[in-house]
Length: 161
Image (cartoon, rainbow, N blue to C red; front, top):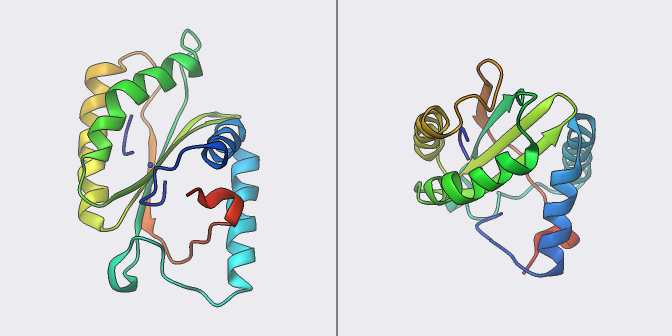
């Protein structure tokens, strides 16, 4: 999938399952509410640098929004991404997190990196991988958005071990 995304922490166990399950089951409205809630909760506290970023530098995030073709399922896509794209995106220097989210309007991919170069490299690798491996999975081209992370907070129940 285009650009890839667990806080330098690939956690396991019940906390990771609930985090993954929650993210995978969110629609676009639910994801927006989750992200807004996190930002508002964190804004009420003194902001701290994102975990895993050296010297308080900002992390970089890329999202890709796709419309899944009617003849393909989210289960097929998730299996293909997990076995094919995840090893690729995890090998990009500065990789922190990857999310694959089913939304009301299709599919959202979120990748987070410690530096812009990693974000840019993941975008190149993702475009190549999607073109070679997911032809016909999507209708049209993805909407790609990139940016630097100014605020990030993870509650204890989402932090894993």
